[in-house]
Length: 461
Image (cartoon, rainbow, N blue to C red):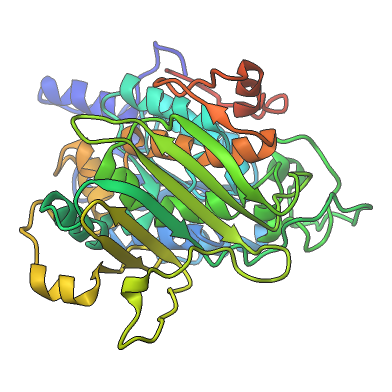
C-alpha cells in the first residue's frame, strides 16, 4: 500500500474531524446501527489453533470479511459461524491484504511457525491490528523486526498468543519475588513434556499426491519447496521439522518461560549454548536437549542463568531437573510435575507447576505458610483476547494488550536463540543489541530469505 492510500481507520478519523461521513468508495463503513460499530476482522488460518481466535472474535461481535486457509476442508471454521457465511475465502494469505487491506481492522495469524512473519509484518505495516500465535516468529531476526515494526507504527495494537500471559500465576510469582520471598534470583530451570510429535529423524524420502483441497505452494510459503508427504507435515507434525517448526522450545517456551521475561525484564541473553543434545540438528530438531543461557545484571539486580529441558535423553528418560530436597514430604521424595519451573534464589526456592504458571509455591511448604500472601502489585487481566479487543476498540491504550510485540518480540528472539545455538552446535555470545559477537557468520542463521514472492507485502521498520 502506498503512502497515498488511506486506511479505513484514517478515513474515519479524517471525516469525523469535519463532522460528516461520505460513503463514496467506502460502502462497508456505513452500517445499519452506526459507523465503525464492529471490528472488521480477517484470519490467516481458519483451522486448528485458529479456532480459538475465530471463536473469540465471533463472541466479541466482530465481522469477518476475509480469511486465508491453505486447506479448504477447514474453511468451515469461518464460514459456518453465524453471520460470517459471506466472508471471502482464499488459500493464499496475500489475497486477504491485496483485496481487503483497506477494510480490515484486525488480523489473526495462526499458521505454522515458518509463515507467521510475512502476514504479521504486512498487517502491522498496513496499520492493521494484529494477533499472532506463538512463537511470534520462526527466527531470531524476524522477532527483532516485528518489535521494530511495533515501535515504528504507534497506532497498531498487537498481541502474541501466549494465553498464560493473561493469567495470575506469573503475577503472583512476581509479587513473591518483589517481596523478597526467595531473595535475589540465581537460576530458572524450565521443563516441558514436549515434543509429542516426531523429532530426531531425517528428511523423509519420496512424495505423495497433493490433495485437491490443499494449496501446497501456499503451505510451504517462505520455506524452500519440498514434496508433499501425507501425514508427515500438514497438519501437525511440521513442528519437528526445522524448515517449518521450532520444536518443543518454540512451541512451549512462550508459555512456560513467559514468567521469566515478565518478572526479570532481562533484555537479550549474554550467552546461549546447547548444554546437552541427543544428536545434531538435521532436517528435524533433536529428540532432546538442554539449553543454558545467561543474562546480564540490570537495574540493580544481579545477572542470572536459565536452563531449558525438552524431550528425552535418548533412552526414553525425560530430560528434567532433579527435584529439590525441599520438595520431600515427611522424608519421602516427591516427583516434579511433568511441566513447570524451579526458581532458585539466594534466600529460598519456588516451584511453579504447569505450562501457564498455574500453581506457585514457596519451598519448603513451611516457608509458604510462614510468608503468607504477598502484597498485590500488578493489575489482573480481563483475559488474553479481551485485553487485545479492548485496546483495538480504543477502550484501553494499546499497551493494555500486554503480550504486545515490544514484549513478545525480544522474548521470542531469546527463545529462538536456543534453537539457533542448537543449529550452530556451539555456544553463542551476544551483545546487548542481540547480535552474535563470537561468530558473526552465525547471524546469517538468525534470518532466512523468504522464497521468492512469499515475504511481507509491506515492511515499515
